Length: 327
Image 1 (spheres, one colour):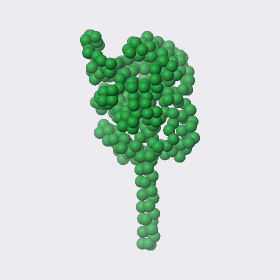
Image 2: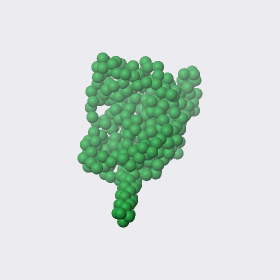
Image 3: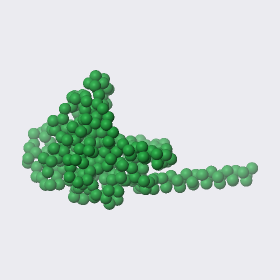
Image 4: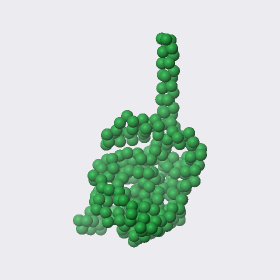
């Protein structure tokens, strides 16, 4: 009996050791798998990107890679992860720069809801694209701002992406076919006004999170240290969002914070933007309301916050016109 128990203990110890070893290998080396057509590793492999857009699904659904490549001079890449937050955008940029990526212009997603959330990774593709150190740093950030539990740790380091890894050749091929240079090439249609008006609003939040403000600060510092020009960009939302008091409170707070960090005056206070001393590397803030986009056209929206293929084409052309004016 004692011999059997010892044998069982040895087997369990061996299994545990194998699990730990495989988990360590996954978290450190999964990033070395053949790259897809989106995500950090695909960007790093390019060595140089003249125009790097980094954001959430707002950029994935809101920017046309076709129009950007047609209108902007140089190479273009859209780095987007679902729910991508400023704190993690900063970590992602830092990671890519340390991996040798050179960036000319950086375009940062200005979406209030991601800035109002406690730091958390919503898209596990981020974990496939990074090394163990990145994941440890991400866990520290999440733990410092959330009531994390062991199950959260287990899901992040042990179970995340296991299914994708087991089916990686097929999964990577199917998903990569939906992107080019990080840009979504699917063509979703718009909705009817009746459908958009029937959708529930997204609710309020408790204000912009300090950790996300620090993320914006880090993005600006990284850009300054590497000589990168920064543009903060807000993609269009359906008209009901701009009529929602909860959203607009966050929107105004977020824009004000970013203006302060970027060194721009608070336009609400009436301060003259022309009084700001500027140079070629001063950050720009481009809000949709300044571009003449039609927020009320249901054909331009999949839902309250994501553009249709028609909407993103129209919006991206307006954005490129503004970028040309700012040169």
